[in-house]
Figure (cartoon, rainbow, N blue to C red):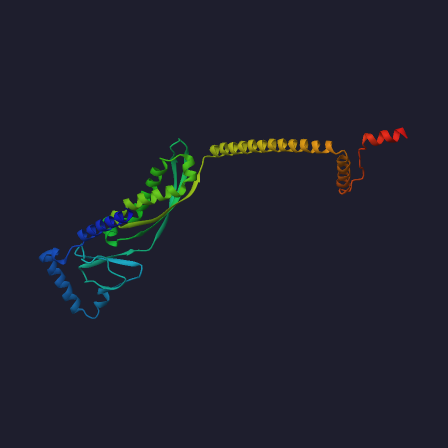
Length: 282
C-alpha cells in the first residue's frame, strides 16, 4: 500500500509539472518574433553577449527558466552550464539541499485541559523545483507556518501523558501530515522532531509532590516487607538455638568478636544464668 501511495503521488506530481511546462509554440507569433530579435541581438554582439547567455548553477541548485513569462519545456536545468537568451529569458535558482528550521514554542491545550508549551524542529528539502517556484510564492515561509499549525492540531488531540511518552508517534504523525500538505509545493518533509515540552510551574510542583509521595509509599512498603522477613528469620533462629543450648554460647562469642573488632573501650558481655548458679553453689 505504501509503494502504491508513493507511485500515485509521483504520477500526480509529474502531471502537475507537465501541465506547468509549456512548449515554445505556446508563446504565439509575437513571442516568436521577440525570440528571433533576441537571438539576432546575441549574434550581433558576439563574443560579448556570450557572457550574458551562459549561466552556471551549482551541484545543489536547479534553475527554472522563464521565456516571456512561461516555463521552458524540460523543467529545471542544472547542475552545470545552461543557455538563456538576453531580454526574453530570466531564471530563478532553487536550492535543493535539506533545510532545517525550529518551530517556535506553541502554547497548546491538551485533550485533558492542560496547557503546555511545545517546540520542535523540521527537516525538509525541495523535491521538485518547478512546483516550488510556480505553485507558491514562498515555499519556506509557508512550510514554517504550516508546521506551527500542524503541531497545534496534532497535540490538541493528545493527553499530557501521551505527549510526554509518545514523542516518536507524534513526530511521525506530523511528518506524514506535513508531507501530504506540501506535496503540491514540491516540498519533501524528511523528518520532524519534538524538542521540548514545558509544563506550568504549578503543575511541575504537583507532579513532583505526587512522585515524592509515591516513592515514600513504596519505601514504607519495602521497609515493612523487610521487617516481616527479618522477624521470620529471627523466629527460625530462635527455634534452632532452643534445640541446641550450646549454640547460644557460640552466638555470645561471635557477638564479642564483632564488638572487639570496632575498638571499643567498654564491652558489656552477658553471662548465662546457668554459669552464675554453678558459681554460687560453689
